[in-house]
Length: 152
Image (cartoon, rainbow, N blue to C red; front, side):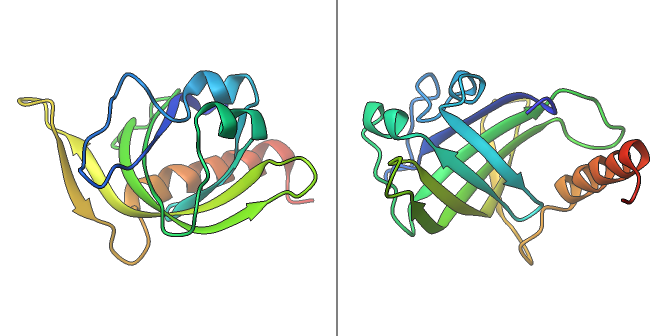
């Protein structure tokens, strides 16, 4: 989480609208450990949501549900975006029968960029399950990890 300066998700409404001021899962939920980003790649992410947050947000995720994902990175990287708007499809839902928490496997299916003139998001389909500039940033994270910790 220290790599992000913001991270939020909204349950995707079939009408295409959502209230940007009321995310389903907000950055504060991540800071409070009500939501956990377990893994992120250039093609998707794994997200755990605590039972209390599921109840509070009246959320019962199902396979096929879609979310709008927004995040910004804390560190600058030359030639790479710092802001990402994505649409993610839920490919798997794993409820924990004891805690009531739910882990979601989300696949990125659309990649958006904010247009400076209109402040609207221009959406495009994710090709070959990879967002290239996100792949580059994650690759750089892995290199830094190996430099710091070594290969063992």
